[in-house]
Image 1 (cartoon, helix red, strand yellow):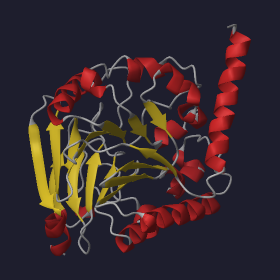
Image 2 (image 1 turned 180 degrees about the vertical axis):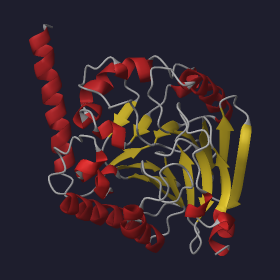
Image 3 (image 1 turned 90 degrees about the horizontal axis):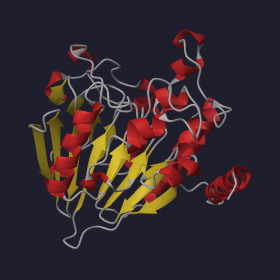
Image 4 (image 1 turned 120 degrees about the horizontal axis):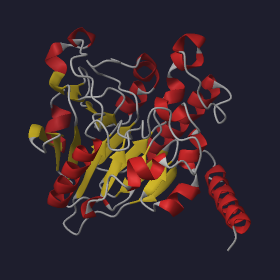
Length: 333
């Protein structure tokens, strides 16, 4: 097959993929991940990672492989900023292999990677990361703007949070973003919130998790994302969301909401970490259960009754473990 035929085939596949999304009538696309035979679901969450192995990315990847084997990993969740410094420049950017395929090589990590876009990804060709061409290069890769992973007892709602942030539309931000799919910030956010709310209301899952790139609650470099707190958080509270997972701040942290059962979990330490850039005044100190300003990742395991969240450093050492039951979580507020 010559290069022209290959290009035509890839383009056709991409168009079919886009048409499938458009025909969902506003519903978020859904991917199915069956639970294990014992009824449990296990995954690793990693964010802010793609640096061609630098800043200990390769070391973190190695430890992820070890933990993935131990917990019986089902899939990986990426919280965005997948490729630095400015995303990918095209579907054929070698950074995709150099920062993803060639780094996460452990046998346990050869599962689906479900990814959202971060603000750095929007600074490049955002459409490239969504392209079916990347799936042909590495079949693990699944990246959409917003979508759902249905793992039976757990439903994970991936939300494209970069368009929420008003600062990114101003000259003061100092960066250029790929807004081709976001002609109007207000309309995009309005319809996305509508789709997320409808999906949450329909969900019958025992555990509901929302994943986005930006933090709602954080004492790290970026702090709280006001737009998400004002526009997305109320919908999460009204629809029984248990956890919000994010990256953006290059740290690991666990913060509890003050007036709902929601737990805010930051896993944005996949490579370069902040090291010392922390502001504890942005959130109630009593709500901050854990903060680590270094490299690492997070694992999550769910059964119908219990959840276990574990944070690890670059050496694979356990830094923080949080175990709860569904009943305990919702009776503690």
